[in-house]
Length: 331
Image (cartoon, rainbow, N blue to C red; front, side):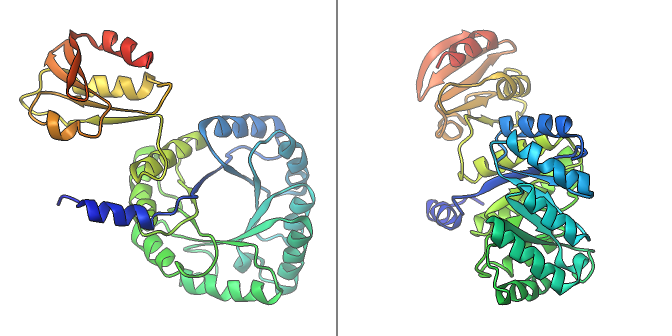
């Protein structure tokens, strides 16, 4: 079904604009050198919030060294041990992530909240399906929000996640009006390809509904891949524009050129100086419609050549991919 202009405008109106991208280091936090190297790789890719695991006192104390090498906020991931949460805050964590259910002791949780207030840090209270006490994710989150408000501590971020796409969507929709920023994502989403698809459905659906302030794409892959997928989801929803957007036809029996290879190469190799939308089409049937939003369009002529259009005007006729790539690279 074709989406109307009115529907597209409504989606854009509902979509959060200040969405930030988060990922998590897979390194041992005690290994400062390795963790800083991964932090820098994530920052280079465009990650804006970085979380690290803090399972030991040594890891908590390592945060002060790691923090000095970072340009984005540092989040400490804490489970079970309230002392580690406070130690992480003392060593520079900008935010801590806890599941109140697996700490349990309300006196200790109050100490954590007061320590966060003292250090000007945020607390993300996160609940994953399967964790203790989280049969109903949204209900559990609302119960603990009330607990922290009574302390009072309100510098909260809320997250409810499931490995089920539907349950993730439903739980976050139930928290849409909770009054706090929502960190969204599918937990344990899967491998690079499967996890990206599952995350795109859940995160994309929520963002299109105006739900979500921070996203993390959980993949069984290099964390840098999580950031790449997150950026593509935001680009697909027009929340942010990637430097390059490729429109490529799926091809059919009319195809005159190797569209698949050209699209893969352009997406991998082209780094335009200014934002660019390029359409790659196998024949001329859909040029008028499919290239409407493109700055430039490649139309297959034969197995080795394309015509390059700028708008409706040909700028290169029967040119090789290499010739066209060289032209586009200089824009």
